[in-house]
Length: 332
Length: 117
Image 1 (cartoon, rainbow over the protein chains, first blue to last red):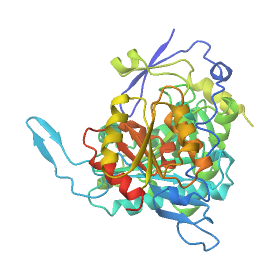
Image 2 (cartoon, rainbow over the protein chains, first blue to last red):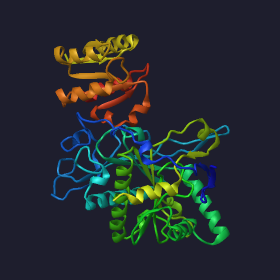
Image 3 (cartoon, chains in turn yellow, purple):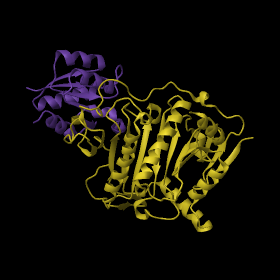
Image 4 (spheres, helix red, strand yellow):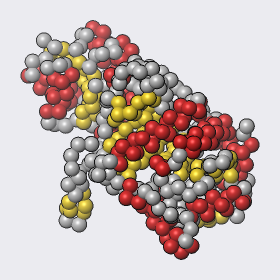
């Protein structure tokens, strides 16, 4: 019989098939990542086709906006939200609105076209994580912003429009509803139990072991108990940490290592599937706290959301997370 | 006189853009689909291209790729009724993105800027 499982943070219900779940081969797709070939505006030599860089790593001392970089961050060339101006919050009858202020940036993770994050050397992967941190720290200085969302779309089905490996960042003047729900859920749990819900998840998963994909000294990768979709993975620090920007340099190395391991396992098990990952971290106004625990959520795009999910807010997951963890664990 | 190629499958847009841009003193030729656009690129040799994204035979973003392979620095302005294409990073190979409107002020400003006027 299928199970209804409840996410302990936001209270979201999912329907999990507990019978023999869909195996990795059932999902195999031949979709290759995004638009291939031709002219790539993110490639070395085409720096003039992007807006000026706001952050870059250049180990050869080359000038900004010229070749020689190993990582670049640029503003979105055609942004949906604009950086200049004031918020001008106002009411329109019962409705609320404000100016569309925000920062939308693209992190070009490598000069090499066509590779994936998992194929970077460890130092380059670590550089990507540092770039996320540096941009969050910089954008936090802008008083108009309350949250920075970092995400990656890998593969056309997951929304990537170029094969050149990149992730994106959007600084927002509001805290997204999904983040608010996580914060509220975590606070409620803390009020009731005097413990961080994520810390409890970490402890229970380390005890149970059945949903642990891989771990190292500092981090743990699990398929969450109430996974919304097959092979969903959360990557969490083992020790309590409310903000991604506050971890130590050694932890960034450790994170890069386990993150790359997890992405490699997904790519091998599911034949390089499209996926999305997002960084979940505390909003600027409550960066240091005892109730929330930053983490990455990685979701392979293996099933489509349809009327039931949209109408109910429930998800149907045909692969129990315990089976997904077993498959992923076996990948060497 | 600077030459502009307008590629759009909508006849009304082709007529409007041609009339208005000719009034601004440009020589304008129009293409109704991707095939005509590629032909005119090699016979008309425009100084700037205004390119629709949704076209019946070849997608505007594919044409943009071909333009960049042939003429890396030819200014291209994407003109689309759909602002959501702005989230597609393949549009970055262009020089400007203008959402279609009956008011051509933004389009004309982008033309002037990209022709260095």
